[in-house]
Length: 316
Image (tube, rainbow, N blue to C red; front, side):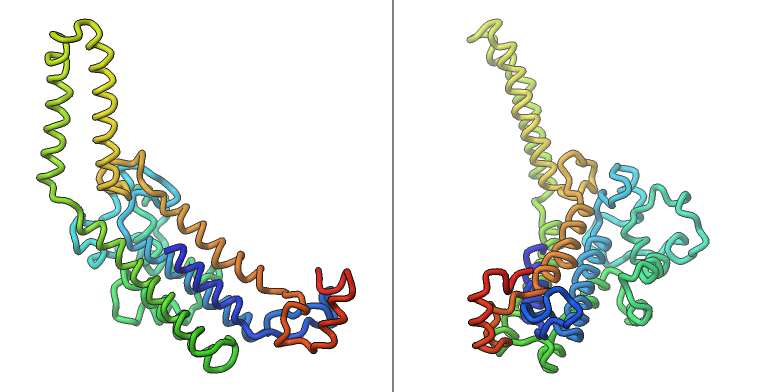
């Protein structure tokens, strides 16, 4: 997911329409910058991609919410552990009533709160969501679990309009690649739900548990006649290895810690923070100012040749 989202953010940043640097800036005459309208478009699309990613993890049942990571938080999330969990998010009083203090929701997950009216209003106050966008989300007729896909569609639509209006420079190949990255991001979203819903049957997990327990219990009786007292440390080693491997396997079946295996669970708040940096800062800052001599399409050839001959020209 992070890879596809960063690809989209990079494509938007590098294809933005360029303009000459203003005379009031240090880069005047030596560099090009993003056109003002193009920069607004790129920042808006990047913000929507970050918001889509945040909404996706908010709608995904996890025990890691950035505030607390414990079994009580997972149990108090109000989400059923079945295939329809994401589709049946229920708004609690905490989500709908902005007067309810957060102290009363210590056992509630932050995801349903963020997807509720109170969470959306907080995003508007933080400047991460426009007020018109909040109204559009609430009036879309779709459940909160679909907000991530709505916002992703908005980002793709804005990008396509930018291509049509000339704010994003590129031919048919660029447009095709940009659409492919958006659809790949959508596919990665769907694959997370598929992986969690398509786990191995519980009967197989129970069988492995019985086999490992039987092996650990019977190993002292099986090894002592052959090895004597040396079987004591060997039995301890077998116990540590097989029981540890079993616990690790269970954590793979429960990567988000919803069923109590928290030591090896994924911390989705870290994933969100990593993507926020990439989509918000990395690519926009990298493409904001570009040395003029490396952009022949936007610079006069003679001026570009003169810039090459000057050792300090073309650099910030």
